[in-house]
Length: 288
Picture (cartoon, rainbow, N blue to C red):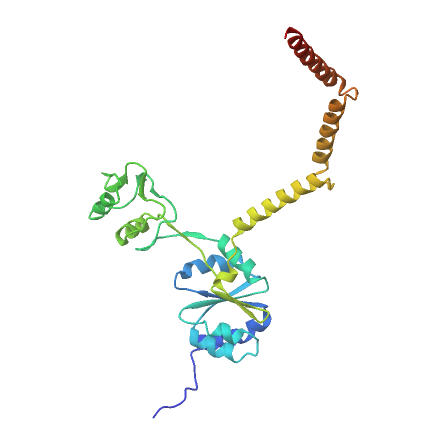
């Protein structure tokens, strides 16, 4: 006969209690799915964001049950997304800023079979410390030149085992792991986040900083050009406007024959050129 369970593992009870408290302590609850994230990526983040972000690895059913009891608008909707292995992040910074900071804290990791190389994977020349054996075949297949010296395998020259974007085979991944060569840049991206009753999805949390930087730079250039054109003086454009006005005034003075210390030489040269041109035309007319 089935009996209702009255006792639960201590870790689950602690997690349940923690998830009861944290959503009320912080303004933002963010969700990270762990399908493409390795647990080793979380440790440096816990240290770096200590005091700013609390990171909790969760069990989906325990988390759903705990969060569903809280009367926080939007939290129930976020709890529905807790499927499989997930991590919750609690913070008072905006979720977009958190996502940007996570993007800036990528780390290089050992590749697994099927991963794509984030960089040109270079195996440096030198002593590998590995004893000869079947691994020599792996080196050969990877295009790495080797020799055996003093009972270990030496790489004779720097070799590129994979180009950026190449898919790394399981065999090459094992070889790179033995050589402690990290080929994959790994980062964490928020899947969704709750802030002030609103649940944001991954696309809404992703900001292309370079795109916005270029847009602001273009807007600044266009605003500067417009202010110069209409003569609207600011501290950024005053030197350009004064220089442009001085050049226009000088050109006008020369065109109208108004003599000043700055224009007299150019004005006389212009008058001389006009007189010479007129003289030539008169001569040609007389010759006819």
